[in-house]
Length: 473
Image (cartoon, rainbow, N blue to C red; front, side, top):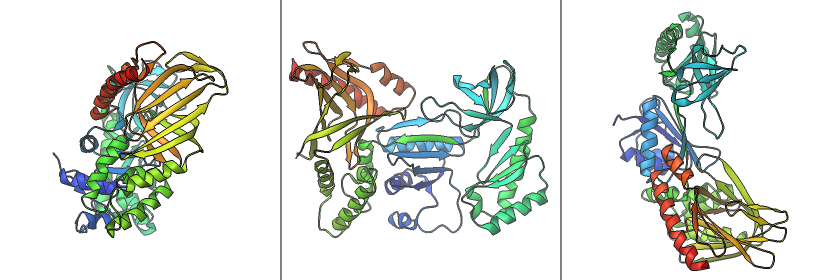
């Protein structure tokens, strides 16, 4: 394995940095706290990472972005292995700033490699069948999102990106040193590189100017060469890879792996990462608990007590369930009213009630619901399912929908889990039935769902068939 340099930021940084270090990666641009925890001496000079791993606005997610392309793929694969395949991930297929040859389908729709269709951002749409060389300026990550393309060549490097044909100079928002920016601008003018737009990336701020400008000159030559080549007219193809992008969702089983990794080098309560990802107040509770743990005033299991406290505080309140899917789509279920919370054998069990006010059809069961009918939902923090029992207003069972998902996480803002596509339903006087297996299989084929979650989902479906038989037949 190539010793790629990796930068790790965010709430998972201690555990991930330690695990990546043990796998042979070189860590760079670490915080002072993280260097001390991992016993890494301060670097003698700047070291630009090949891959950055960081938390996103949704703290259950991490972004993996890498250049060169192979570095991003390698780190993504390693993190998936560290987390035992208990993750879901949406990965860009082309790469940001990847140069591609496409074929026009008309109306600015461009046929791209791997059967992907992109949209050209241009005032003039090429004729149908015309081949053209373009650059990906937005990857397709979210459901229904398509790649956005621009005419011309953008060639990305470690410190800069050169766009040809174009003009001007721009800087990353993180290049805040005015003297450094002024120097780079003046040197660019001296080089007299015309018909190019030079964008200086954040990594340029700590790098020797000569090294940065040597890269700019090389990229300029390559950008012009690629632009002047004739595009492949036979079939869409990738000309030069840009940045690898992956957004990985970290469900509770993966967080528990990270809890154990972190606990080997610093005081860490159980449910550390789940609580950190739940919100600001929960994070403050973690800080207090781990200071007590460090002082010997409590044990790691205090993390379970914190979740129990949060769950009980939700009793008689209206709460929602965040039903997140591996493709990054999301449904908010509810609101529910929590009827009951119990703690036993290191697990929290909750019963939620919802009374329907409108007519409709219960998904999966294909049964009509009427105003006054209700659902009784049972979840358990150690179970890989949430069971919805549907009842008429007079208490007659209409059906059961057992949703298969990762063990639920509880915070003051509600309940969340990762849906695993496959489910089990039961109608009165009928055998339980597994549904949506094809969605699970498709997610596995597209590498959206990790192997660990895939196997667990199928195992749970088989187990639930037996459980529902015993409960209702």
